[in-house]
Image (cartoon, rainbow, N blue to C red; front, side, top):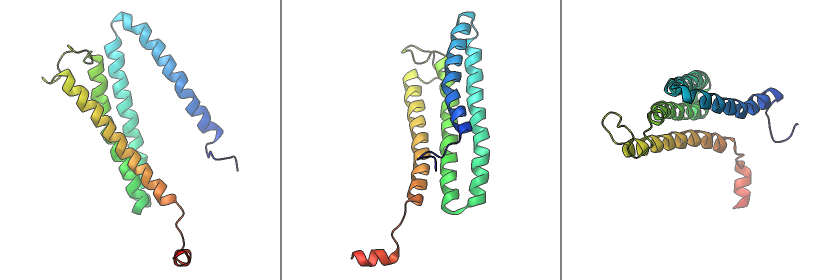
Length: 155
């Protein structure tokens, strides 16, 4: 046994590459921001984020059908939370690109920047609560339960 982590060396290398990619994205965004292409890069980012989430949903939903029962339910909760997150984050990125975080940012669909700020941020929080609830149910499912004879002895 390798300790409390079940991650392989490949998993760790993949995960450690995420900060490197984020730093590279920051450098690229700072270089193109001066050339008027930031909205295009930002929109590409929102499409990429939406695509990654959609691709993630496919194995989650297939696995939920395969396993069924409580495991399937938990996987469906996580998939639903990710779907809500995608519905919140893709237009949220567009909202930030438009400069709407500023108090006088341009309205989107005729609604104020404050309305969109509240909507996007609360919608994102709700999506994460659903995802966390799915994982919490997995944790509860994995907890060891006392056997019936142990319960009767403790009374």
